[in-house]
Image (cartoon, rainbow, N blue to C red; front, top):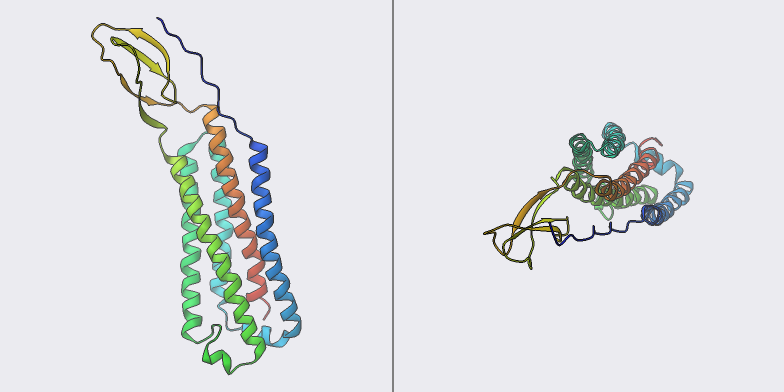
Length: 253
């Protein structure tokens, strides 16, 4: 055996830095929704009776079902992260798929709820709202703005979780080649396609193509776990925001 190459250095990963960066991003999201909650509080103080009356036109059952759905999605997200930490990829992928399913169910229910309100003319700038009190117009303006912004965050979260599902479920396999090897030799390649060692074999081609199936090791799992955990933090934020939106719009009547 000849041509032994040194083992490649493991890729640099800063788990603490990645987590801090994610928390800073979530803090900016909290500032955004906190400003909207403050605006809601100001207008509700000025139109107490109008807000209570307008809230009666919202579908409490749909709001309650969506609350249960998002709480369930938080549970499956947390269980998925725990399963992946134990290197149970199949279970983690299944739970992550349930989380994504819950997210789409939330958006579908919200679509039907919005459609019903628009059908009855209860949307900002509608002729129907023009005949009602200013407080009701403000209520529905805030309702569509805040729940719509939250819906966009849910959609962004579903795109992120879809990528995470592909990452978790994908088999760690790829084909690599070893260009530049001496003729009549075979090589064992690392994950970057570099030869770890070569061995002369009579009649071997100048370029050997191998298919590597990587075993699940701590280094690979650690990098993917950081991404999955940060995605889980974002999804929990989406759920927490809805926990505040639900009582503010649906339960004040």
